[in-house]
Length: 583
Image (tube, rainbow, N blue to C red; front, side, top):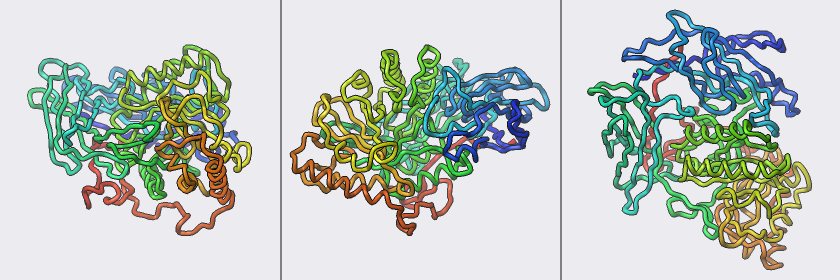
């Protein structure tokens, strides 16, 4: 059976270049927890070497294999066991593993992970306005499995892929495929689906070398941001009725659309999207967050009335994706292809790998609606190679996941006509009037500027207004004005002026308006926008209504059962995890 052991304790961190003395550390850890928070970009970018020992686990079943699982190492890493390289990895935000069976011996084994947050010619991110923390900031596990097991080698993925689809009769189909390493004719995979209340509602058995199956569940409980109902899919690998490995994954039954005229709808219900953009760090912790930190962040975002999160600008922790699944958010997930383009095959291969890891590792999360392929990449200029690389990433996304929409975030000065359009399903513009440049009053003219030649539809986040190339009327890009101390509730301010102007309709958050509005409507729109935004420049009073610090119970779910599962009062969302013990 699978056995997972946490290796988060008893590490020694050294710096080969001598910038800092050696220290004992516990994971998750970053060496930029303090200097990475000062905002001036002078934090330490170097190589740190994490070292500890471990005893190889004894696998009771035949041909046991031992894996080191690194949940993230920023930004690149080399894993060694007893001085021999087991694997290398570039990219600071995704899971990767190494089979170290043949490198282990009896007794104590030395595990060394060399981590660097220095820049390389082929790695992203290269330049951006956030800290590139260094360290093992999500933890490390030791995994023991039999020789035949669910896959651990394919791009850090979970070894199972589930695609739930609502059916016209109110039920749902679950398309399931698991991936088995070293199967033979004696192995089977048993599937079971449990509803949000823990009752089995479907099951099947498949041969281990042909695992795909479609199961039907009647009267499906749909997943939405308001009712995040989660089903649990269980896969058990068996040989002659003896269990060899098992997997558990939480999934949701939902459908969604984005259209020029109807905006965003989930399960056929038009739903305004109001939300924030989130980075994975905290003061004096950096990005070395605990599971409680992730769930508390998600709960705070929910408390301010948001139902949408853009996860900037890289793959986030599985803990946070799990929180979004159980609490209920529509998520934009993206890779750190940001700001400055690096030419060459090696850099593009890195982008493709990061996108592949993002999709493979997170395919089963119902909260993820959109894959983002780049952010403000024209800051560093445009080239034909850059455009072609975007088309290739779009093609890759559709090959890996045809069920979700793709998107891109343009920097403000990106022309409305040009080769960077008509690539992704949805598009967005980031505007910063009153922040990086211009003044806050510039938002009105921006929202009422001339209509682009390509009709678009709106799907907005706090700092972006996404647009799909399709027929219909055009909608204004949003602005990104987030003064200090007002970030959590800025989105409600954005929504208000678009609702109160006669003739404009609920333009942001899921429906369309027309840029070529009548002069009186345009003037009223601009005036309402300025009136609503100007108060944001003043520092708000810290009252009970503006304080966003979470004061509720610090539980794993960080949410009330009513908020997490409205259809099942008193029962928290169901989740299954392989038990982890600490070495």
